[in-house]
Length: 218
Image (tube, rainbow, N blue to C red):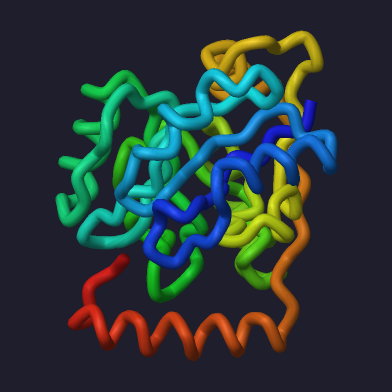
């Protein structure tokens, strides 16, 4: 089963995908599981959880004070702007697992030092919006740490869904089983990487958005 573990909807400030578009695109691509990881929001899960077609993992991409952390399997929204350790603790209190997202993305990643210094439950090894060198380094870092790994498209519009994913066992029927397979390391990762033109465009846009936010991470 293909599982895209990093997808945004319109409930992210920079997201465009409606819940209906997400489900349609997942079906078109044969994706059986999606973690909806909106920036500091948890609204999409209730709209998608009972769709009967695609397994939806309750998740969030949380903006800690030092960078983004993906929370998988949570039962509530995790507030942003907390320290790394506070964010990890809040994710655990919500029944979830904390993954260091795209650690080598300089304007929103945690960086290697922080990823190694804190007791994350796992690492996002590949992200389709990261450049090839960043993905190679993320994979190497994840292997060095030795904990569970994820991969995802980081799609902010429907056409990019599925560009990054993991392969899970085909007999999974619930999001709880999907998360357990991830934590048991019963998955393999696959992902495209961002090309140079897309990287430059995204980089300039992100820098201006960062400045507009008063140099706060999203």
